[in-house]
Image (cartoon, rainbow, N blue to C red; front, side, top):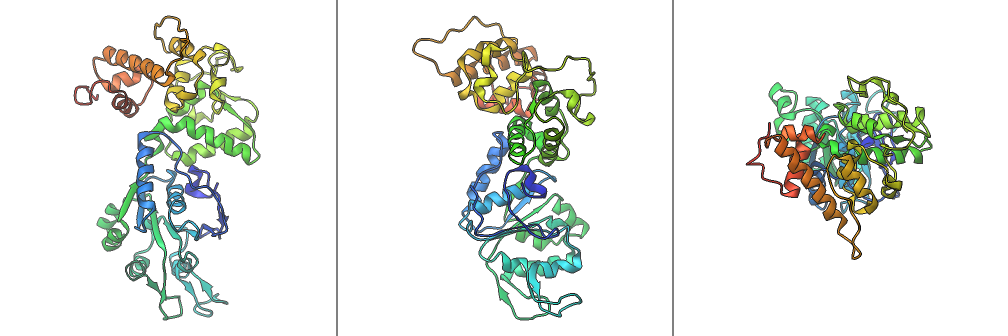
Length: 414
């Protein structure tokens, strides 16, 4: 995992200097992949990435810190015709304004105090590849003017040299700031904004795609094991508690939490009591028996056939976890009865027909019936029905569209 935003994914790169970030050389080999998640928000981002990757259009990645902007930038690069050329990441907010020009454009020997040798800038290093300008909103106005000229003319000059150097790089910029507000305050140039804002992609915060939480947890657990830390499992109760957290630090915050748990809870089940206090429910009390992997426990990261091993009864949270994982096709038929019973649905004992059945359709029918019952109990109010199902309202709206249960026009949102 690379630094900063890349905590939201699983790319690795050759580290650059602490100030300038990472440089991926053509010799690096990695499998191109998309962002982790199956939510509607991530599917939309994936579609946009696929659409823009084949072109050299400038991309502007927007969103809160920790949402995976560098992962998205790397994915665009790895999916583009420039994939065999360097990917160079520069954190514009981490480099002092007086040094950023040299960092980007390079300098000649003796051009300033301390310039004991000539040095290439990031534009030259990224030649033929992709230059990722992270935290572009923190760049000084004076530097913005110089960057604008490069973007317009694709020509720059090294510090201390007036010979123009042509460049062929793709620009991907990112910021957590609202650039339009920065323009109004006079801290960001409007002409540069329009030059960068060719293909904007707004990265969603984790709280708006909370249904991706189980998949992300599994990925980070596996990543920590690969990096030599301990294997952990999250109980359904712990996962439910995490699903209700605000996640102001987004996916980066989740990655940091799983890394901590992989160290302090290595080799065992993580319960609510093991979570740092800020992740525990406000009304939680430590009077419940410790989970032993028996009834009501679903280990995150376990194979689907192990989830229903032995016909164990699942908790509501566990059923929601399974249904939202999107991996229903892999579930064992023997577990369907347990899932239905745990969800509180009265259903007769199910026998697998000799000719088999469509498991995905069967589980979708169960989910549809429970959603219809919740809507009926809530008099058609989506927000109330979502609370009955322990879902976010946006998640329920997405399921309503997917399952064709009513229409958003005939349902009350709140």
